[in-house]
Structure formats: structure tokens, C-alpha cells
Image (cartoon, rainbow, N blue to C red; front, side):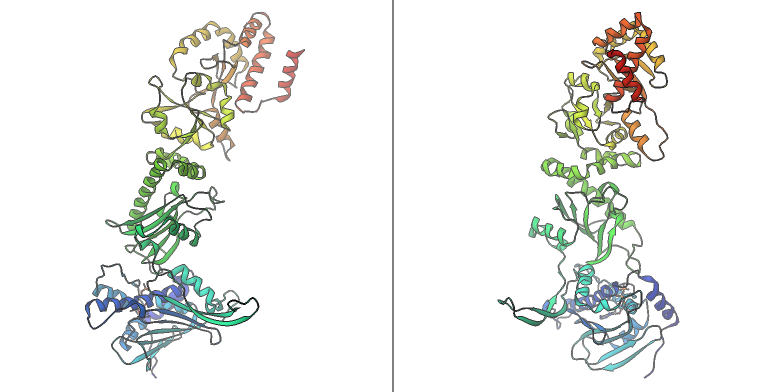
Length: 624
Ligand SMILES: Nc1ncnc2c1ncn2[C@@H]1O[C@H](COP(=O)(O)OP(=O)(O)OP(=O)(O)O)[C@@H](O)[C@H]1O
């Protein structure tokens, strides 16, 4: 029999294919199953226009048969088959896709879209096989043909007998090497898991035989041998089903089966979008943070399917960072895939899908916040920090779309509130949105700086997360109301300003004396407008607050940021009377008091005293 040579380009291409196009050997099964599914689809198409042909779903299937003894793996289908000419053209010429030609001839409009388009998938078989044999009988023909090849050397075609229409591809699986085990492709359970991974939603049943030993039904000791055929794929993708037919349990089951997480998602979003882009998606908002979520190891992304076949496990381009917690999948037929299907060629479609998805996620989160507050708060506990970080990063590029999703603890009923809730109940005379920073709500409540704002009956937001103040500084304002740290120089509460200024002027000499003593530590000492019961506190002038100073300086490579600190003294407090008296009689005592008051203010702020030994000595001095 004459051995035909692959065309010269084909020969090179085949070598390239076997060695470099695909990164994973296991995808050969996906490619062969996709071809088998295409071949069945082609009968379906023909039946649409040929009344003599009846397409009844029952008769069509794909069977995968491993044979360990002969070291072969067979993929058999009941599809349209190939004539000798088609075998020659489709399998003898690499990069020639019979499926693409067929697709052009039969424009599909009903979702039965063929998968093949490049004319290379078949050759991935040579990644795991030394020899590939294809026996095929075309629809409408009595004669079958056998195509056989051991790779780059060429192929033979000869007539053979085959009872049914369809194709059978037999792979002679390679011997194991030191680094590679090919044998795994002869294990039914491994094959099943590959079908589940890549081809679960192929429309036709994919069958595999399983055999082994098991306990006889009803008996606890008697063992029997069994052999059974199982359909291993789910066939109908849940995302192609009508939302009305699905229950929350169906979605939760899908979430668990797909190993998206061990938790129960707080919400699922089922999308079926048609228009500028066409895609289906099922997205989940998880409840709990994956253990590595806030680390570099975490990889965001959605599963990407094209025509029901898995293309990419984690397509990160589909999700913006601030929604990186979302799990799920997208299936679109309108993507341009590259030859190995491992990458997307033009990302215009993908960008459109990603933008569309981000909008949908946002609107679903907003409706969760509005209609199911408790669930939203649960979600926010896990991923709120991500949203705040999203508002802050990229110089606030996303702040407008994220600000309404933010929640902060508030002094009113000690609950989480949205910025909108805060602003909508602000009294008319309140000019700013007030917040205080600290380690915990308890600590903040004890801060002297909060006294005036709370006395006024204004609501206070508690910022206990490092990112809070940075996020809010990026927002700058919300509904035209600026944010104001209760420790900032000017609180915008008018009534007390004049009096404080008067007091500062009255005692200017004393304050100047104290300021000179604290040179390099504080930029000013003045009478406080905000203190009620406490004698002293630290505030800041300018943009950098004490908390920001702490956070920025704790970062690696910090550039030693300094907040402009101001020591505020409460002129109504008894301590101030002692200070005044000392200033008139004993300057040394003033210095001692100044140092003590400054160190107290540091402690209240949660900052370390600069010289603890000196500080305790000073306390002893006033005790004796
Ligand atoms: N099981 C099969 N039954 C019928 N025809 C087949 C079968 N397998 C392959 N073919 C034919 O061989 C052609 C080449 O297959 P191959 O997998 O190389 O490329 P493809 O499926 O067209 O494109 P892709 O590279 O995108 O998978 C197919 O287009 C199809 O016409």
C-alpha cells in the first residue's frame, strides 16, 4: 500500500503541534471529544434540511474505551463520519478544518455551534499516542475507510468494513517515560475526571465502562464482579437552562460541584446577555474569604467556556480587582480563541463582557444591600476591605462606582451604615461627615477628640481598618459633604471657635513656652475647642493624620512620614489651673507638666512614649 507524505508544511506543523502548541497533554481528549460532538451536530444540521433524515437524540453518543492490555484508547462516535476523500483532506492536511467549511455552509442560529475551526485539534492525539488509527464510515456510504499514521512520517488510507456510520479513533498510548506517565490515560476514573473537567457540557452522552468488585446488594459479605456503562457528562449546562426552572439549591449544588468554595454563596447571578456581546454566566458572591484571599497567592478569575467547552480555568481579565472575590463561569460563542484555545486572540469581546459583568455585579450587590441587609453585611465582613481598597486604588478611578457599596460602623446604634444613610440624616447645621480612627470602636469611644462631635449629637463613623482613612481621603467627599477626622485642626463647629481663640491669645506666653519645650515634637500648642472632660489631646494640622502616619511608617520602605501634630489643652480643666499657677511661680514645674501632658496625649493616641523611664521618673517627681 502506498504511503502518502504529509505536505511539507504539514510535516513541520505536526512537529510543532506535538511539541509546543498545547501546554497540557490531557487536552487531547477534549479535542477528540469536541470533534466527535461536531460530527454528531453535523447530522443534526443535515436533518434540518433533509426530510429523509430523522435526528432522534437517543441514537447519538460518544464512547471512550480504554484498553490497558493493548494499551489503546478508543474514542467512538455516531457522527457523520468521513469519506476517503474527507479523511485525506481533513486529516492529511493540517490546519484544514472540515468543520469550519461546514459551519460556513450551514449558518447556525439555534445555539448548536460547531466547536472546531482551526483544523489542528485532532493532531493533539500525537502528544499521547505513537500511532493513531481512524476508522470512519460516512453518512450515506456503505464503504468505510481506515486512516493510519505514526506521526510525521505520513499516513495510509485503505478501505475496511464497518457496520455503522460514524468514526472510531484508536490511540496507541505511548510508553511511560521517566518524567511522564501516559498510562493514566487508560484509567477509567482519570478519563472520567477529564471529561468532567473539559467536556461536561457536550450535548451528547459520553459513555465509559467501569468494572470492579462490590458488595452484592443486600449482603454485607458477598462480593460480586460488575461491569457497567456510565454516562459521565452532565450534558445540559445549567447556565443554558431557564432561570425559572432552577432553584437556589440547584445553584448551590453547582457551586459545590465546581469547588468554587466550601461556603454557601450569599448570592448567585445568572446572566444571559444578547446584543453587542452574547454570553451566559453564572456568578457567585461568596460568604467567606478564602484563606489566602488577602495575599499575593490568591488568583482571581472566572472559568471561561466557549460553546460549552472549558477553555480557561481562571480568566482573570473577566473580573476587576475590586470584584476579585466573585466566583463562577462565563460561556460565550463570540470569543476569538487562539489555535490552542488556551488564550484569547482579540480581547475586544472579552473586554466588553468584563465591563458588562462588572456592572451586573455592582447592581446585584446594591440590591443585596437594599433588600437583604443582613446577608450583605455578612458578605461585607469578608470582602468589605476589598471594596474599600478598590475605592482607594488606581487614584480613585473606581470610587464613584464603589462608594455606595461601602459600610462603616457608626456611633448611632453602633451599626454599620452607608454613606448615603449618614448624609441623609445629618442635621442641617452639620457641615461635615465626621470620623475617628483607632484600633477598635471601644478605643475610639474613649478618645478625647470625639467629645465635642458627640456632645453636639452628631453621628461619628468609626474607622478601625487601616484602609478606611485612605479610602475616604480618595473619595474626598460624598454628596458634596467633606469628610472630617475629629482629630483635625478645624472641626467646623463654629460656636466654640471664638472662645478657644480668645483663650489661646490670653495664655499665649504659656503656650509659647510649652511649644518651645516640645520643639520638633509638635508644631503648636493651643487651647482646645473640642475637649470637654479630658485635659489634653493631640490633633493634626494638614492632610496627614496621626493614624496615617502610623500606617505609612509601618510599611516596608517607608519614607518616615510625619503628621503635623498639635498639642491641645483644655482650658476648662483643673489641670490647666495648676499649669497656669506653675507658670507664674515655678518654670521647672511647667516643664515637668508639659512633658507629662505630652506623653499622656501620646498614650491616648496609641503612640509609644518616647522615653518610658523618664516618664515614670516624672510621675514619681510629682508624687513626692
Ligand atoms: N470524529 C470525527 N468525525 C467526523 N469528522 C471528523 C472527526 N474528527 C475530525 N474530523 C474532521 O477533521 C477535521 C479536522 O479536525 P481537527 O480537530 O484537526 O480540526 P477542527 O476540529 O476542525 O478545528 P480545531 O483545531 O479548532 O479543533 C474536522 O474539521 C472534521 O471535518
